[in-house]
Image (cartoon, rainbow, N blue to C red; front, side):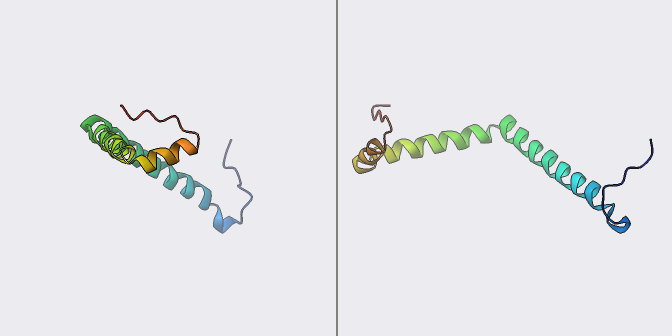
Length: 78
């Protein structure tokens, strides 16, 4: 088949493959970080912390009533 032209000047032909390589590399690193977070339990701990913070915010009656006024179904007994 040979090489395909990308519609760029000859001196810029390296640009698209370089961009694709860099974006792919970033996605692979991000995926590895995500997998490590899941396997070590850090992600679950972070979500538990966020859940606890949310429950603590719901203890504020003014905050809960404001959420109800926005249409959220709030069950404080959780």
